[in-house]
Image (cartoon, rainbow, N blue to C red; front, side, top):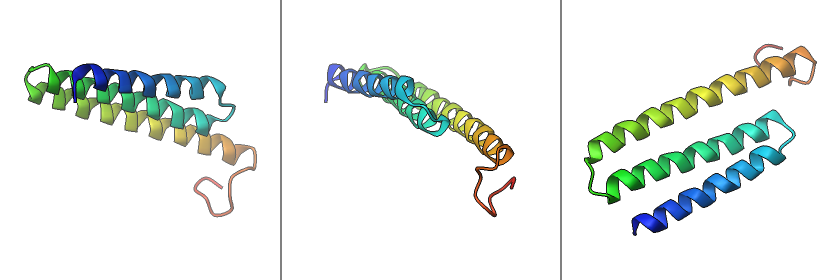
Length: 98
């Protein structure tokens, strides 16, 4: 696997995520598209640090930080979605906040 190939795959994933993010009407769909964009960024960072000969430990730290940031953003958006769904009566019975 070459660096160019990995970056092309990461760019394609990012473009797919961006197109999905723009085209989604629901908050949950936008969240999934955002997570896809974050995964492509993590792939790009991992590819650059691994295949460019840089210290791989630095790349691993950056990748772990990005995974944590993506997870935190996902949890916040999902919490906001559930709170808004519970407020307008569209939440399922027995779901948290209902």
